[in-house]
Length: 153
Image 1 (cartoon, helix red, strand yellow):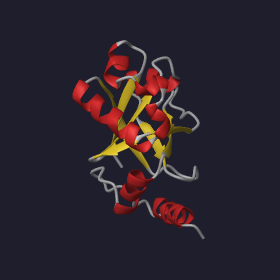
Image 2 (cartoon, rainbow, N blue to C red; image 1 turned 90 degrees about the vertical axis):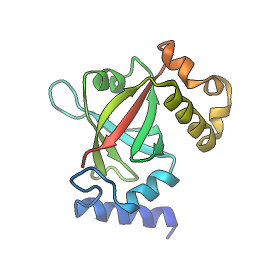
Image 3 (cartoon, rainbow, N blue to C red; image 1 turned 135 degrees about the vertical axis):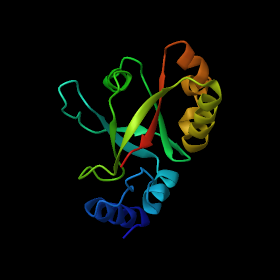
């Protein structure tokens, strides 16, 4: 059994016991380890009618107690988040979400620079073409939306 598969099993078991985050939103150590070492998570946003979208895999970065990701400004994720939608976050398996989180659009150039640097460290393709351009400029131009997810359970 590979270490990643074993981590996935541990995370699934943790989800089943409801221990991915405490009531204050702090993530448990196994989730933090996953967020520090893996390249993809899946997120779902809440539609206007209250239903949840299907989980979509995304690149992300994890800093402190928050997950950050970027998306196109015309994506359903961006539209719903602008409307105040929370997100559900899946780690490895889509059986149960690992945690839910409150969202916030990020426009602070200093934070955007940290996200950009983290993407370049984590994803080799981020060094190429479009991804090589500073994130702050793309956000300010309206070409990208940066999102902070703060765990709430």
